[in-house]
Length: 152
Length: 281
Figure 1 (cartoon, chains in turn blue, cyan):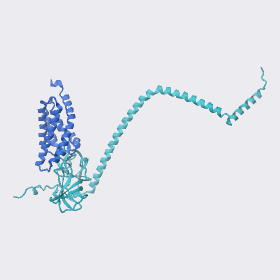
Figure 2 (cartoon, chains in turn yellow, green):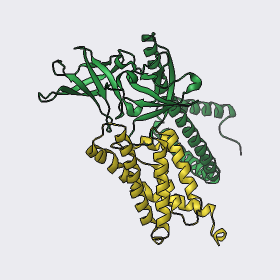
Figure 3 (cartoon, rainbow over the protein chains, first blue to last red):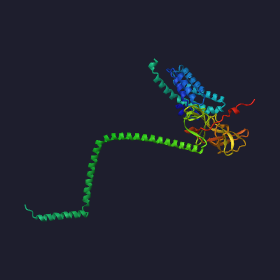
Figure 4 (cartoon, rainbow over the protein chains, first blue to last red):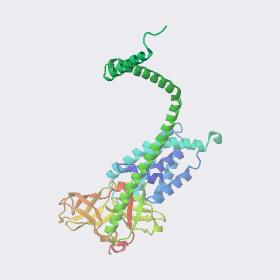
């Protein structure tokens, strides 16, 4: 709801923040969270329900983000912010590329240069800018939901 | 000892002295003395009064400060409440103005039935120019219904659920609307783009168009009613090497600030896809 009512209206050129992607990425990067896949699927379903983009694009995109996050969480666990940036960057590019391919298959006239300068770059920039605060919020949330003693 | 003056004479002398003093005073001969005396008296009174008030202030100020602080807090709360009220009222005035304009538009175009709706969201994908409105099938909204504001064409309903609908704006890159230029009565195709800009394609090379020409829907294709205002021509691109002219359009509607829209509910869009979709063998 926050995404479609507020965040989608905050635009840089034609790009906007994908808050769901950031939340899914940050949630997937929390080592103590076990059900990140479910949340990725749920986020994909919700976004697919609201958006004009086919639902499977968002499901594939968000599940890939969770997969990437789970892959990185064990590899660069000492640099969680670096992992967040990496997941955000790759995940955003992947989701935008999937959408671009889908629109191209539907014969929607899109100029690659225009898409890159007007959508891809601004969206990646906005997502990277918001990656740190979202990661901090989600980390605090995860620590609250899954306290240390429960982990032990 | 017996007085040398008789009693009555003393009385007369005292009376005369008093009369004399009163007469001198009334004549203004004692003014310097009375002024000096008054000044001394007033100064003394002022000094005493100031000291008294200082003592009173010293004894009562702490209580007044607490009272003032409480009053200040209450007044600040009151100011905050009134500011909130002012903002709410300003918003209501803005909304009323927009709704009033929509009602005027509906009255000016009585051939259609309208359903008012608020824009409650935008599509999360940056590739798409869609908005979400708060009316759906429960209010009789169906896919394909045109959506307008008092300023002109907005788009058409793309998908509907019970309580909401998704509207594809004419600025969407997949949108194509048949339009005509009012001045030259030339048909053209209005298309959107990823940047949200509108342009006219398929304008015949023979057509004479110029900046400022008004663009209206033509009704061709059956997806939109005719004669709905879209915008104005801003610039024209005409190359002899191309089959058609192109033109940039300044839309009448600000699609980034949509708040309220009208869905035309008695227009039945025609799907001509089956007639044009399959090429012959």
